[in-house]
Length: 328
Image 1 (cartoon, rainbow, N blue to C red):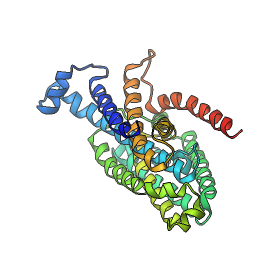
Image 2 (tube, rainbow, N blue to C red; image 1 turned 180 degrees about the vertical axis):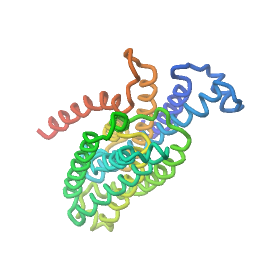
Image 3 (tube, rainbow, N blue to C red; image 1 turned 180 degrees about the horizontal axis):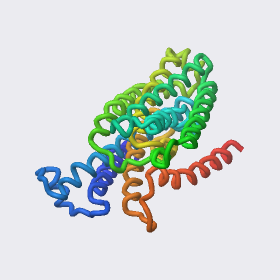
């Protein structure tokens, strides 16, 4: 079964992408989507597919993939089943960078100001986490990331509290709730190189994660440079998750959920979880984005980050209870 999991997940991802191109306020016929992709024309279906839905679904695939991969890497690196990308403060760092761009009006004068500031915030938060935890081991890295995440979250709340006008407060709140609506090819071009580069770094350390499962001391005795592996993981997560958060805002729980969904199917060897978790994360975000477009409660659409929280929070509670029952 394990050798078929990646092809099956890839097929499911392609099917999800196809449905995403069809679904929305205006539902399209498969022929219209195919025609828009193969024979571009300046008609309404073509504009909807090429300029609205295609960049949106590509961002969903990239963001979900890097979140799932980052979660799998962190759970293997830290040997903690509850680890996820937000643990190192990268997500909140990117959010704070975007909030600063909105707060001081940079985003109003330059469309990509929020994503660019978000990237800077992600790298700064990741760098601080690693510097604080330098030579301190896994526990120190977790504590440093948690401390930075709490501090940055407090700063973000302060900016929201002191927002100079209601419009800025609305923009900040909308950003923090996470969304890939109204994203363009500019956002894809900005985020894709960082996400793909970060993902490549994380896949590169897959074998090292297998050895690290034995413990830091045993890994070093087998020739693994533990500090170097941590650096590569941190840089990869900062690049990938930072770029994802910079263009979409905070989207939680994907990095926590995706590895746990595939681990029973592929085993507990960290390297074998990476690719299936990447594909599963992409599927989760694409399907969640479709749900935010088609599920309405008589008001505005649900933001992607809010929808993921509604799904992820019960899963997190189940996971905590499951881990407690196994260690009891």
